Image 1 (cartoon, rainbow, N blue to C red):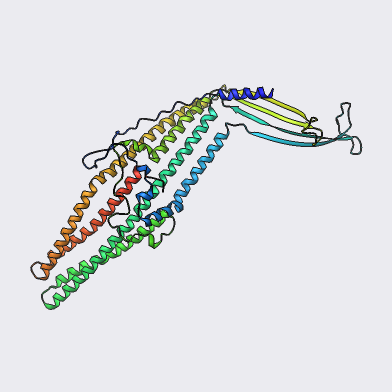
Image 2 (tube, helix red, strand yellow):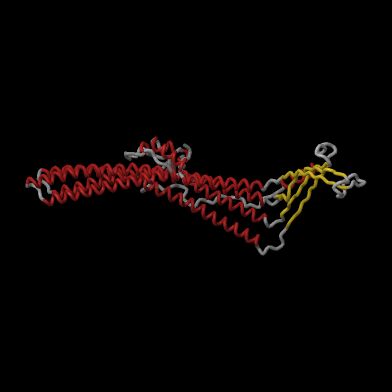
Length: 476
């Protein structure tokens, strides 16, 4: 009989249906190809494999690799995100546990004192000095009000919890990619600020020499007090720039350490940006915009959409009767030693119940309408995530398509400016040109040096941005 009951229960469980609508991924509301022509670089067909590139490969500088590894271990925001993923996973386990019955075992032992009846049992309480004493020992186990998920309500809630967990996991991946990109950009900024400080110090040294020359010319009677005053102005301006770049370098270092979550060793800090060799110079970016659908934030939005879709199934199933099952199995004996032998009395019980709400003031219908509305909102959020990803990549590609030309122009401008400054200074020393001509040429050369530093930083950080907006690579 017990076997028949278990077979019947299994049949009921297998017969359960799902009220969750079939999921269909929304069509991406963006062009099938990334932008081409004009400011954008030419791209090969396909979607590339940037998400397969590990950050160790993308950031080949050993110092930067160590800094990123420390940030992944120490950054407090990432720690909180990882903890939230663990919370979502635990909540899924709780929701999924409702699909299985809760089985409890209850051992019991009791002793009675009273008179012995004709049936041989103690059937009353007597005095403390007379009558008989008997023991009753038992063990029972069973389920209490286990819901038979015929309509898939519990299953839909479990699926929603699973999708929420997966969404949080993709959110963790997005946070990790963002952290890697932020740390790399901050590290490159430190190098650029160090370069800018070097330029400012070199310029200060040159302008101190120019000031000394102006004073010497004034003493010899071939210079003027105005030239000395103008040289002092340049020297003071260079001193101010040195102090300002010292500040920005210290602040950039502090910002990097905040992202890392721990002090960064001096040996791991860049002393120069150089030519941007700390990052790859090219990425395998393809023409197909389908790569955006693999971005962690887009996948997170899709899992949230799936969770909302599953909640519709749970709300639909709530409109149907709730069927619960209660089961009991047990053994009883007059002694502990006889509990599991032939003297033990076996008992079992199985009962079921069905509950159908007749009137709830429209609460269940309201829950279903709310679940459907949340799904509509989740679709919009998912589509906005795809559009945002497309815009991020398009903007980064627009900068990537023109930055090399700008870099070449800045380098040519610097060569010309330094040449003009050298010629103007020589002509001023020989009395051919005025001091104002040499002064203007020196200012132009200094601005060209600082502009080249800024452009090199922009080129390097643009590659970091492309790494991030195309989904990055999370493996080491």
